[in-house]
Every structure is written in structure tokens, then in C-alpha cells.
Length: 517
Image (cartoon, rainbow, N blue to C red):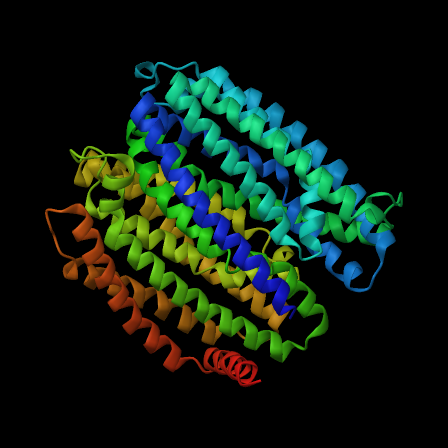
């Protein structure tokens, strides 16, 4: 593998994500402080709706990146240029579809906010501003995919992250000076235009030999591209129905105020998850190139390594999240009186849910790199529909059985069941059958043992945590406890995994040889 390019992509991505995590928390704090938690919930709802509309993207991004691997490796500039021109047209169409879909959704906004009458905001204007900011991003998405296909993810990360930093700074200034949700959302448009301009400059300078070529795609490649896009479209539907349905259902059935409180927990969680996912995502193109060159045995060993790495990273971060989340909410969002703190059952189920989803990262990384997303194209649709039906049913069931305060737990429990019984079965089966060409039996055993072990350790951690009057001391103490528990679990995982030890030892030997030299 191109180790330098891999390391550069990961380091740049992680560094910027940590910076953006701080920015996202600050923005949420200022929203709650200056225009209220109900607007915070409304902003979260808009983000979920836009995510749902993003299904129109059809998985074009993953399809274009995968289709470009081989021609880039083989130096076929004409073919790369033809693919680029094709996907540019597709992205423009997608942007138009999202714009039209957003306009239709605007008519139903009052029905998606259970307590909208108590929110003093123009739903239509504010949603329209967010919609426009998202549509703008599709005007340069093909250029972003082109850069990523050449394994230069660090460039697009710098551009997108710098744009978000600009957005956060402008939004905080606007909140302090105007306390206006309208101007707050207008800042997103300014940041999107800035990212567009930066991406245009990079592509015109670095890849002018590609974008200047006017060639058309051959029928065989077009057929392959269409096949991959259809497959990724199905994956996109499933992902949208799972990842956005929870917020929409909470808002529609419980209310935007509760969604605002819940979104504080998920903001920190998703920021953390997005950061640690960057240990995997920037490697997609690198592994894609490797899969073109390497034999299947080596690919299997790499996958086993990444699966255990997936577990180790998850244990460290998700146990840490559970240990400190309530204190972080208090510190980050100014909840001195505890009005933004949810019950421990909610934070427990959030932690377990996101860990289970995170444990799919290694499989999805190799799925996208090997192009096997076509073979399980129907799985996401079934997954998404199942999640929506179970979530709505569990809202009523948990509210009736345990009280309204447990309605949120019901929604998340539905997502956990969907992931365990569908995603963690189908995705590995497809990868092992069509890419690794061996049985997935051993993987299932190890994967479910990992999940069961994490759940058991999470329960044990709950009894080990301390309760101290000083929030900072309590946070530090519980963080140290989670680290100690994590180290014990990690040592056990490393001892039991031969492939992981193989690559770690090889890496250590290379470091020693370079130091000796």
C-alpha cells in the first residue's frame, strides 16, 4: 500500500475533525444560549431531512471513486476524463432532484415538528436556506470525487474542513450580534461557495490534463457504472432510512425540544464517530489500488487486521464517551441545572447503538474498495424499512410500558435490532463470498463476541464510575476509569488475534530499523 499517502490522508483528516468537533460544540452552545434549545432541535431536524433527501445522490460518489481506480492505476487518462464528465452531469441532475424534493418537503414541515407552534421561527424560510447550501455542494462534487480517486483525500479534507471552520466562525459571530436563525443558516451558503471556489482552483491547477480532455465513455464502462450506481442507490436508501429516521421520528412523535436535548448527545457522538471513522475512510482509495495489485490471501490478512483495529478503536472511544458524556453536556452546553441531561439509560443505549454501527467500518471499507456493494444491493432497503417500522412501533410500546421518558430508548433499540439482525449478517457474507472467497463463519463468531464483550464491559463500567460534586474532577476520574477498563479489553483482543500481531510487529520492526539506521 502507499503508506505515506495513507498516513497523510488519515493524519490530516483526524487533525481537522478534532478542530471541527470543538467548532460544532461551540456552535451548539451558542444556539442554545442565544436562540434556545427548541431552535437547536429544529436545526437537528433540518439536518436529518436534508440527509434523507441526499438519497438522490444515488451513491454516485462511491461509484465514481471505485470506477476510477483501475484506469488511474493503468494510466488511462482518456477513460478517467470520460468518467469525470459523466459524473459531472449526474451530480448536476442530483442537485436538481434534491432541490425539487426539498421544495415538496417544505409543505409538510409543520407535521414533522410536534411542538412547532411553540417555536417562533419561519419554518419555510429557514429550511429553504439550509436546502440551498446543500444544493450548492453538488455543483462541485464531481471534482471532489476526482481528487479523492487519485488518493489525495487530504486535499478535499483541507478544503471542506476549512469551509466548515469559516462557517462556524461566521455563525458564532452572527448569533452573538443578531440572534437570528435566518442569518445563522445563511452562513452555510457563504461557506459552501467558498469551498466551491477552492475546489475549482485545485482541480484546474492539478488535474487540468483530465478536465480538458473531451472524451465519451464506452458502452461497457457505462454499463458497469450504471450497475454500481444502482447498487449504491440501494445502500443510500438504507443508510438514510436508518441514520435520519430516528431524529425525524423523535421530532414528529415526541417533539423538537426533546430532539434538541437528544441532538446534544448525538452531536458529540457523531463528531467523535466521524473522527475515528477517518482511520478507515481515507484508506478506501488506497486499499482499492491495493486490491488491483495484491493477491487474495494478503487482502484477507489486511481485512482481519482492520477488523480488530476497528474493535480496539471502538472500545477506547465509546467506553470513554459513556464515561464522560453527561459531564461533557454540562460543560459544553451550559446545563448547570441539569435540564439538558437525559437519563443514563438513554446515554447507554446511544453508546451501544453507535458502537454496533461502528463495528461495520472494516467491512464497509473493504466493500467499497473491492466494489462488492452491488451484491447486497437489496439489504439496505430492507434494513431501512425495518428500522422505520420498528422505531415507530417501539415509540408507542416503550412509552406505554415504561413511560414517555423511555420513548427515545425505544427508537434507538429498533436501530440496534436492525443492525444486529440484518447489517452484521448480510454485509460480511457478501464481502467474504464475492471478494475474499472464503466462508464468513469465523468472522461472525469473532464479530459477535466483540459486540457481546463490549456490552458486558459497558455494563461493568457503569458500576465502576464515580459520582463527585465537582464536574471537572468527576469527568477526569471517570475518563481514567474508562481508559483502564479499555486497556484490559485491548490486551485480550491483541493476544487472541494473530494477523493483528503480525502487522503490528512488522510495523515495529520497520520503526526500529529506521531508528537504528
